[in-house]
Length: 410
Image (cartoon, rainbow, N blue to C red; front, side, top):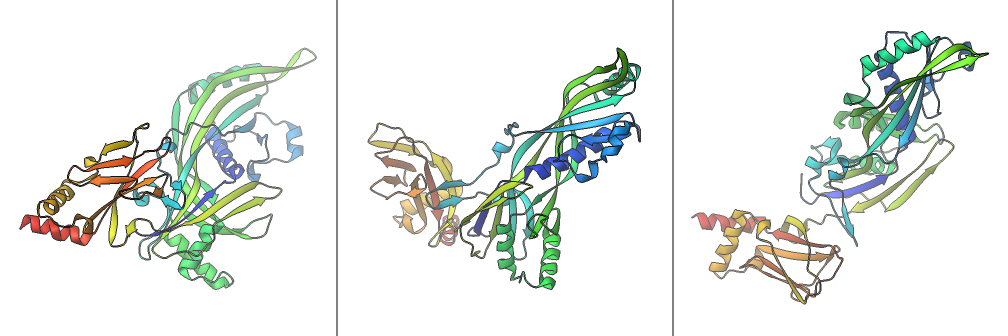
């Protein structure tokens, strides 16, 4: 991929209810797999966010064909995000946005390396607790079931469900950008079908096109594989239901949680620019509420004929008129040899290299706000500011860099 690809990003509030519905279906299948086939005569979910296939007719509930399994999913927005926080997100300040090594760092949604069109996803971690209750006919069956659950499923600990299929909607702004890049006329049904086939061919999952039941507008769903972390939250316990002092039915309760990831940001990357105004899109209907915030990011890794080699943050000391930072670690041995060659031969180093300093992503003025000594590879900040984020960008003319390196070896 080219260093100066265009970026369009869409930060979204996913319809979490649909994801929880997916996970509830997976949880139902998971629990049923731990018991003999057809052990549960009824399965009910206590919230409306579950999938419709799990809902039973009200008349069947009254019949109380035992055992009955009840599932209560509880969404936990404060899931431990330690792992996902290790993913690099964009840095934003003023009008400068930066993504770093998208190919190696972000989850690939769509990968067309023929036409240089890519879609990546930055994930968020979510957690859903499942409170399970099984109603059985007697206290004797209750005791057997408690022991069975402890032996079959354990009382605590972690395990994984691998390669489970979850679905999320691809933001409309990303789809609109891709139709621009591919020249698809969205009013032509034949072209729309061909576009869907194109998405299928290069996607890292399965893409379907369906109509939103509330609005009637088309949407594109991306089905992705996800590993689900299962945690047994507590052991099983029982209680009894008495009628006229006679035990009629008994319950066994137990709980576990699912943790997995969902896309929170989609990134469209292409060598060609997408014409799309920065905007916020809100969706609010009887079913859900969500939003999508989209913006274009211009290429910023090229300065004239020079390409960006490194981008690093640094911290300045406050209450000083002059502050120096040693930056030798930013340079490779090859680059340091070329710099030494240029200095020793009194050649113009500015034609090959450029070091630029930024404060909160605003480019500073050389020789007024900062200086850089190529001999010692030291940056000097003049009147540094407190509580500001500082970055340095190292740029080089790659052609001249190689030409001078060849001269060193001759």
